Image (cartoon, rainbow, N blue to C red):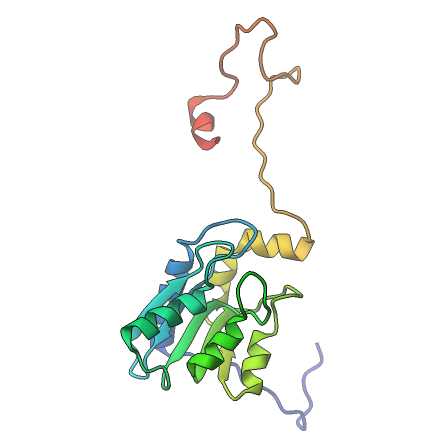
Length: 199
């Protein structure tokens, strides 16, 4: 890699506060409660200017509010003033309309001035939320606990990168390629531990 020239403007690495770290860990824990499937699991936390995690939300599956909208709804219901808060999210806010509206729009409508997210959304349909927010004056930073967020959605990221479903197959068969004896005398091919792992 060629080092930048002295004339080039180099973007500094974003720095994150301990409160933002705490909020992201809360968002990651919330995301882990989400439904695994075609969508990523995502969590979000509303952080006050004083560093208190006020509200946490997560995506509960296809067609339900996204994590950002879930956390913002909790804030609205509690009467929280969002004008000096930071929204901390495990995945870049989406910028498209599918079964639900764009999270970037919901964030702008709520008046949140700062967004911190862990990893970018590389899908063609959803990415672009960070850029859209920055264009409207929102302070956006990325990369907080990115490795943890990537690990949480490793299956989803792999499916997106390889443009195919992530599939796990467990099969048990005998040496002759069978799954049971033709006369019905066999009962188990696998042991108790392997059967415990199967569905």
